[in-house]
Image (tube, rainbow, N blue to C red; front, top):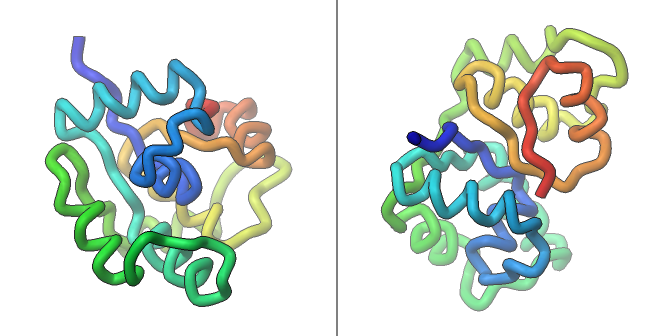
Length: 141
């Protein structure tokens, strides 16, 4: 059975790439492995921006400079960048439902998942609550 297209939230991408698999649930980890094997793993360009911001502010420590880390992380088979398209940008300000994510990066991630028809892998409590409204499919990491 083919895996779902998965979009990783920034923290899940960082944990998976740094080998911090204890941060991820077993179902999330298995889904990530399956999606990666089938070429169905996506990282939003917004996550790359967010990672660079976190690294610049000293909130994330990477084993190398951020450019090299991102280049290596995105060079792995099975993973692709989901670009920021006009459709995603517009969708991010027209999300349906209540309790919308306040963080613009989270709104972009939700919009990306919706436009791609992907499941969003996250541990963000607000995004998980929003997914329970059934406006985006999420997998709790």
